[in-house]
Figure 1 (cartoon, one colour):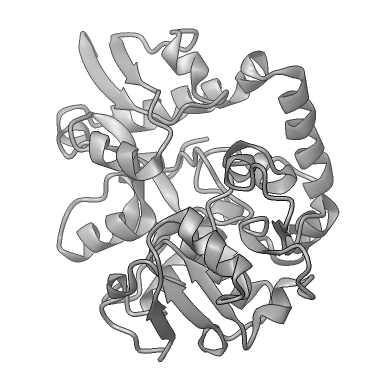
Figure 2 (figure 1 turned 180 degrees about the vertical axis):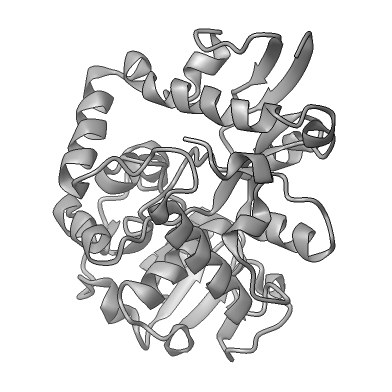
Length: 323
């Protein structure tokens, strides 16, 4: 392979920095990285004009349903534990996600947005809550066109701040927000600190890292809502390049400790210690397959997908045996 130049849209994070500064290289391949877009939906939009980027599992599955070739690669930039994401008032009696049954839960997201699917997956499969037992207040209730499960979905505000104000006024019992990737979704910080800045009157319903780790050990669930992707032309023009990119991103992931602060590195290692393994290895491992399968199954049962789908249907075939 000679003189292939790629445009990449990748999330900012220690696990991508070695791609940005060319510490990781591939013979015959060069790239330019856009790595300053923190808002995930904005990265999805920018990816449309790139050779390598990121997209949501639901969007990729819908494209495959319509007959598109699989474009995902088994690179998972930002898994979230999806338990710190549930915010309640500080004086709330709620102290466990299981207690949300029968309650009113607000979110700015649609029910099929990545954060919401990840959280509802955990509520249903890790905490045994029938989703129909919750009264949902969504900023985009029209996002779930079909509703075969009969969920109660009422319109709520589209902004995080407005949802949190409704929580303080006791119009809802909890609010779901986006927390942060990887270890931040176990220990806090990142986006969660921004959401709760100056709000001592709110807290996560479950905030103990040991309890979050116990959920993972019990269920194996650590939702994968977004996947690395390549452009439609890349597998056709360069059949081996997608698998080589998985290897390159994996090398960058292995070098992440070089780019973390000492505090971040402590959190990263503590997460691995609590979980008993490193869940951030790329490739369609047994655990990754379990999580993508669970997400696809939930999306199908919610009516967001038209048919059941196996995880392998999403990935460029040459990448399935990588790592």
